[in-house]
Length: 125
Image: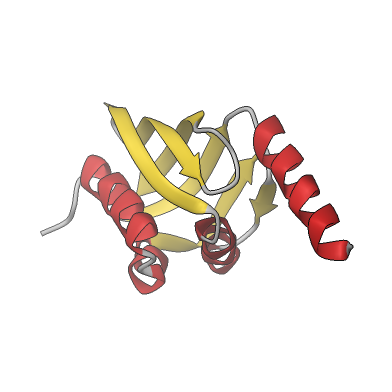
């Protein structure tokens, strides 16, 4: 049975939180794209690589609400990291034929960027 877009989006977040990158790769279209304040990706493989990188600092994802409109799923959540205060985040996904084809994310990245710069300065000393 084919999963609904809402179920696929839920699987995305569950797999990301669990660092289950094989499951993440299985629900991404090979040509999936990502656009967000900290990076871009042009393929499903690049999307997984970016999520792996983010998972190094992500400590939790607290989902507040999920909005579904046909193949479009918007998830509103708080992104908790080990380096900055939680960031309220919107994640829009387009899901076609059981695969995520597009991901667009928006949040205020200033605290994460500042913390990353501070950590980089500490490690370079």
